[in-house]
Amino acid sequence: MILVIVLNGFRALRRDRGAIILSFILPIAFFSIFGMIFGGMGGNSTPRVSVLVVDEDRSEPSGRLVQALLQEPSLDASTHPKAKKGDPDPPDYTAASAETAVRQGHAPAAIVIPKGFGAHPIAFGPGNDRTPIRLLHDSSDPVAAQMVGGILQKVVMTSLPGTMAKVGMQYFEKASGGLTPEQRQSIASAMAAIPSAPAQSSARSGTGLIALDVRDVVGEKHNSMIAFYAAGIGVMFLLFTASAAGGTLLDEAESGALDRILSARVSMTTLLAGKMAYSALLASAQLTLMFLWGAAVFHLDLFTHVPGFIVMTAITSFAVAGFGMLLASVSHTRAQAGAIATLLILTMSAIGGSMFPRYFMPEAMQKVGLVTINAWAIDGYTKVFWRDESILHLAPQVAVLLGAGMVLFLIARRFARRWEYS
Image (cartoon, rainbow, N blue to C red; front, side, top):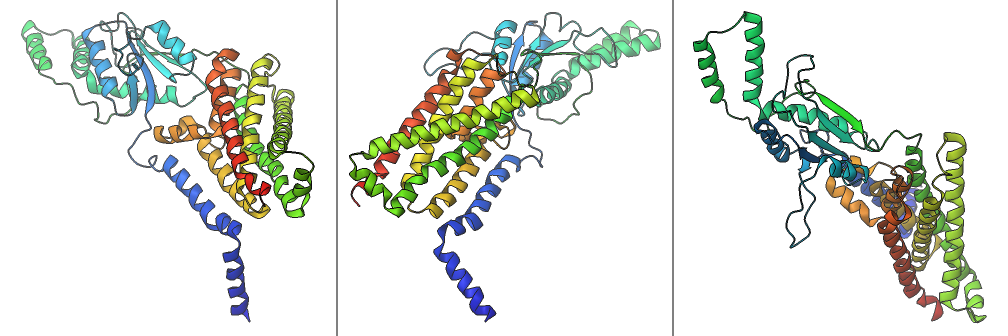
């Protein structure tokens, strides 16, 4: 009897596609996603960090340091903006343009090598005889500045061995009471023969050979990262709500109510548009409540960002409502819709940044995340609450989310034709 019960259970599972998806496909999908995100973190590979490099000194040591930074495999370093296809390279970054680029989110950090660095580049131990390198960063990415600072110390050791030897001999000469001219000449000849070490060689970061002047160019915010989490978690649950709201179509189709509605001179386009409008309004109310809760409990600075919040909330709600309509149109039963919704929403949330910030992900995964509603919504809310950008700067996010909502609705309308001819 036990064997019969077991066999009956597997037969029932085989007929339930939703249960199969939730039992086997969803765990494998999540394992694959997080394996790609974290898979390389246990080895010797270091996530590449985008950094802008400005050389104001134009000396031989600063030039060698810039070249080493550009060749460093752990950094995606650049001295000028990327050129458009067919155009010449734009001018090099200046300290002002690099700071603007970091403030606007084009890169999480910038290194500015100031004038005078070549005269006093490094020192062993504490002291004010070093010219500090300025490290500009955006604290919305709390890891980038620490990584760039550590890698910069490493690159100095591998790119300026002659300078290190020269400074070391200066310390030695002070401690020993002076060197004879013959000794100085012999040491100078030996140091001239020292080659630059390859940038890939290992060295411990944080040795303090150079002085760093670290500055957050965005400025200190008061709990603005709460907006990031409100947007990330909010969009994920909006997708579930939209899928449930769209699922009322399936309930009406199964009960026969849909046939009566369509026979009452209500077109399928009108019906879908009405349900999408309801879903969008419900999503807007949910996001508004979440951000009001963040303002009341976590002191989120909501009321000084009302215009940007309204735009992002309206357009995000429109996009998730389109997703809900499509999901209902392609599904044939409530159980099927629930299984597909769970698989798609959790996958989109994982790669889109709702569960894990995208700036921690490998570069390839960050690009993959741009196919999700989550990523564009989170980027838009970050612009509003973290970077204090105007509504005009939300144009890319608005265009993508608006386009996504319209395309999803049109595809849903195409699949919904089966109810008109059934």
